[in-house]
Length: 384
Length: 86
Image (cartoon, rainbow over all chains, first blue to last red; front, side, top):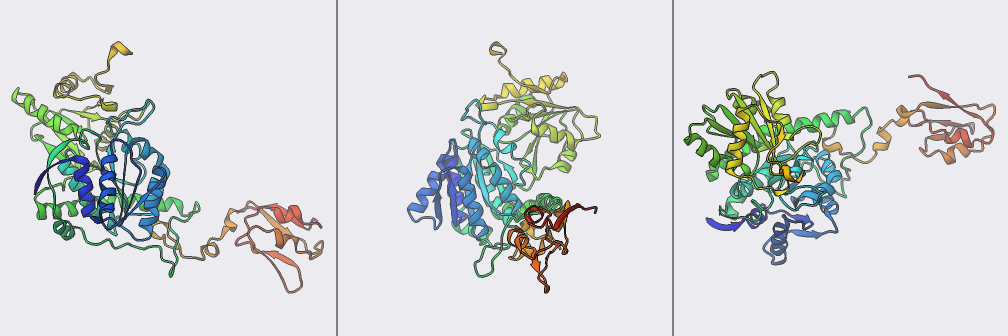
């Protein structure tokens, strides 16, 4: 049924329908509305879950780690500084192979303090072993949560997942949402079957120490699990498409790429703007296309190499920057295209909530055609 | 030993983990100098020194990490720490 809903509230409702048994989170802008709504559902007995209030994000995710190890389906949500405080726990959750799902309302990292959107927070945890899905709109942000639990809890994956969507731009925007019914979600998402769980009658410890003889192999196996998640994701998304008609089965999405001379690569809500800009440029005779990365971890290298084999130039938009290097997406796109001569140009843009318009996308395509790139786009020279 | 998913472990792993591989200096017990006081066994943080039938004390090299506390505290200076070649 279509409803006009705020992104955060749609996500909270979808998460509630996934029947998490434990929710632990700490409020932080722009994620707060999600956990507020979930706390209300628990208080009103609409969701049969334990809502654990904690003193900060480190404790929130730690509570989730314990609850997940004890065999519960768990949920958390955070952003920016909150995610930064969870850094250590993120690596532990992945290393212990706990299928936690956490929403990230993407926001810039301080200093300087900024509550506005970019994707630096989740990108900074790219090496942690969490799968990372990026939504373009609120329908997708909502649906990716059902998928996230399916993929995370698959016994060949057993990894935690970030479902990322741009803070404010999506979290606080009202859009029509086709909300699945409880029956539909129950049909798609079976009860959580833990691979192994804490049990006083049959004690087991999680994430024990590994000597140099074993640690290397543990990292290899976690890396292999992240990579195996590709097929599990595809299958879970195809089943979702068959049941509900919305197809997220591509780790990437191609838009008007068939004869594109300039290919734009981007993630998240900016892709809506890019698609509109492409339509206008196409009308003016410019052959531009978009490759949107939906799944950033596991990184879709083969898919990108195939999708980006034909254009004359590639413009990668990054709402993040690995300071002293480039945007994280551009670095990895270039790696995916290793050995090919096609230029990959990087544009850092939209940091800390700077608005990105269609005219900016057109300007970037102009720059790419001139071979100018690897830059912070749109710098206000007058304040430098 | 095959890896357990998520480095999960049943109780008793401190027996399976042969921490003797950590050792750089190996304690060598000289029974000639030993007064059988048992200080080494009392102070061994690994709990890997045991008393034999004759009342002498011997470390279990499978677990001894070579910390050297026994050698440092032995009143008879009966325990030498020798660098080990592996």
